[in-house]
Length: 196
Image 1: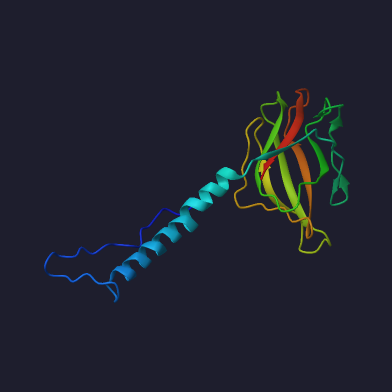
Image 2: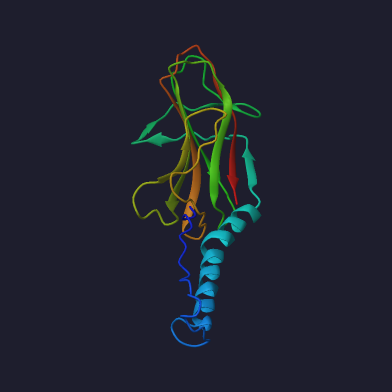
C-alpha cells in the first residue's frame, strides 16, 4: 500500500526591505533549492514511482482445469472428487469431496487473486479452494494456506503478500467440499490465478 503524501518542505516567506537574499547559509537560496530537490525525490520514490510500478505491471492469468488426486488425513482416506474431462464433481450420494493437485507458478511472481468457477446446487455445502505452500524439505510444520476462496465466481485476494519462491517451497491446491446435500450436484470447472 502506498502511504499518503506528507509534504516535507515548507517555504518561509522573505520580507521586502528586511531580508537579504543570499546563495549560502541555512536560509539561502542553495539550501532552499536543495530542500525542494529532496521533496521531489521523496515524492518520486514514495508516491509516483510505486504507482507507476503497479500500473506498468501487466497481470497474467494461469487458468487450470482441476485434475485432483485423492488424499488421506491421519491415515483415513477422504472421499475423492469424481474426475470429469474438464471438471470435477461430487459423487451422487456423497456429502463431501476432497482433492489435491500440484501448482507450478513462475518463480518470483506476486499472486494477486484466486478464482474458482463451478456450479453448486447444495445450499448447505461449504466449498473451499486453497493455494498452500510447504517447505521443499518438509520442515517447518504443516502446509501454510496462502490464499483461499469459498465463493464461486468471486476472486479472493490474499490477506498478505504472496510471493512465489520455488527454491524453498512447493505449492499445491486443495479443493474441499463439506456438508453437501447428498443428491444435489456440486461441480468445479476451473481455478484461475492472477499474478504479476
